[in-house]
Length: 322
Ligand SMILES: *Cc1c(COP(=O)(O)O)cnc(C)c1O
Ligand code: SF4
Image (cartoon, rainbow, N blue to C red; front, side):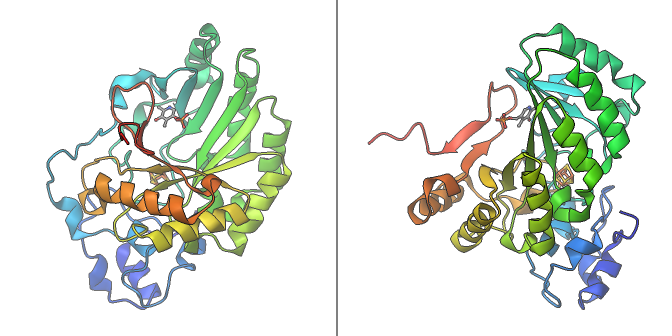
């Protein structure tokens, strides 16, 4: 994290690109890209799909109708600071605002992180609310990225969760196994494998080129610790909006024993309109993917709509009549 690149000119220079490329205003969301990720980008290619995820664009300051600060209704689903619930049986904890990468399309790029719990004792009201609701079976650690917290902080938080008898699963939404694979340390594995709750780790890879040998090794370690591994991808214009990119990503994930879980339609967050792929194009891509790959390699194409009881499935389209 300390050696991560934090400004666009440095990033461009390191890749042999003119530093004028990243001259866009950062709109309050600075560049952050770890060296281990930058090393997987193609030198001298301004259109590299990994670079596009982290390099600010002048398009970010363009106003686009329907693109807002809180596109998925996080504010209205907050039960208390740091705790969201939208769906039955699952609550989501915003454990930190820090990430190992700043994804330009991030749906929480404007999220007011500073209001949430910062330390062990500050989580107490959240633990009490979960304990009081026996319908909750799963806690999702999200953020930000929960694996930017130390193992000690994570252990402390989950020790409190483990004592709640009706909890069964601990889900971790993280990009760290992709961004800084060495984060999956012996201590981290020990935390997951000794936890009473069934561990599910959902990684976030958008392109096959993200999955190099260092990532494979991190995922191997997680699997050996009996962690269930799923992936979520955001459909992004100029990154993975082609059959070739999506099928390569799915096949590489399966080789690494990771199930492609969700393909997300972009959340309409202010500053990210240039990443949007029309839903019709997305449906066409997933239809083609379905024709090309085994069923288990095809992610469910979903969209999060504020106020709905689950993520909405875009493909297979439940509305289609034969
Ligand atoms: C996406 C999301 C979940 C998880 O949904 P699944 O369909 O179970 O993957 C849970 N809570 C919130 C607030 C979410 O946004
Ligand atoms: S890792 Fe996730 S939370 Fe962090 S910037 Fe990227 S999309 Fe946003």
